[in-house]
Length: 265
Ligand code: AMP
Image (cartoon, rainbow, N blue to C red; front, top):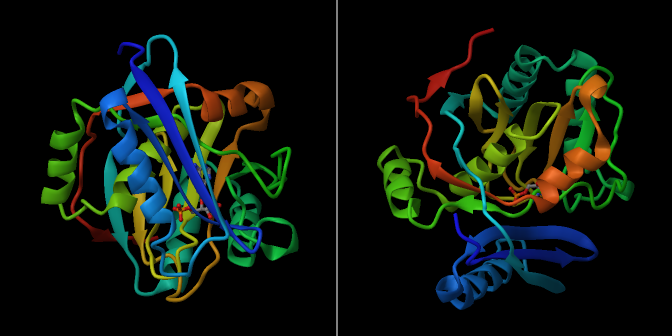
């Protein structure tokens, strides 16, 4: 892809806590409208108005690699507690140790930033021990500079919508997970939203792809976050964080989509 692209990044905060964000890659022609859309999103959340909205627009230089989105499946849970059990099972299947899965699940549920607050980005977790590895426990690592390739966007959105998965949050999380799964030393990702009304979450791993779990949290819960599990022997902090935060990546192909099913241990 040519270098006629800009990265747009938005993050909103309230009471010093993360309360929304967005990551896009846009052509110059689409830039102004997309920036307005991200700002509108920041002030339009069910949890109340933000205190600050930070927007960064930056030219991307050089060729941008293109990839394929992860395969997508949906696991139906009886309630959010059952959803957490499903998430734990999927993490173990991906190669995360029980102690590490439990530590991350408990950390996200309690608020993984100091003082039990919601982190602005993701925690990095040793998949064998559960030790936290991110340099800043409030900021975490921000997965940035990724999007659907503009030319492929309409067809990908139409295919997701036809499968009942056209929700903007699904699209954005699928793209974010696609970049996470391409990171070196990555074992799995766990996520649920801090948006009180949005209950699904997911576990992603390189073999099974992006696996939604519905629901993964209780109605009205404003705690959420992301945990990136890494293989410590292959993990290099600089390379891992540089890839996720700085290296642009576009997705031009959709993975396979499976019909929703129930998880059985
Ligand atoms: P969201 O799905 O936007 O509600 O985000 C859920 C949680 O994931 C947030 O509370 C943050 O802790 C974390 N998060 C949001 N955006 C990013 C990002 N771009 N990179 C890493 N973590 C993020």
